[in-house]
Length: 179
Image 1: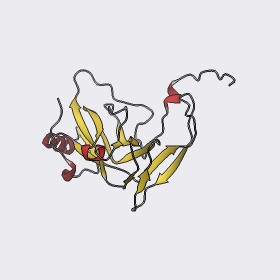
Image 2: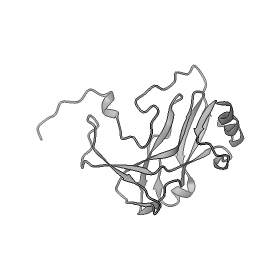
Image 3: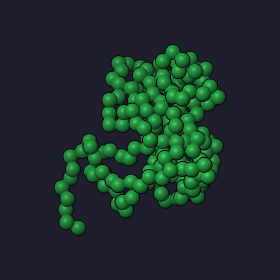
Image 4: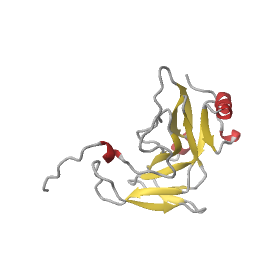
């Protein structure tokens, strides 16, 4: 079951979910709009390595916006800190942003119960697109969980700003071979 907009507002009020800052104007019929934060990260390495940390370059989006270029992955973040110890949050791009050719969440829309923080957005444009800090870019839905709950305590907990992949922390590095 998916929470309706009115139930999202009630759950935000009684603490079953947390959205900070919360604005009733961002509540939809069955989701909550989230806004783009002012910081982007782009990977600086030509080849990314899943077994090692990858270098990033930071971009601050000013009031004039920033043009996202095709072929580049941008890691953005939500202004809002969103989470719940009760519901499963799902983050998707807004349809109006998708109609501009921007993929907001490429492969990871499911949040974990117990995560609380700013969400990292995986932004990928199909053509050049100017984005602005504070623009409503995505929407979070909340799904009722069934069964025992084990809250998330992972590496992205309490995230502030965009976070690059920390996949390498979960794996034993593969031996390097000469190329």
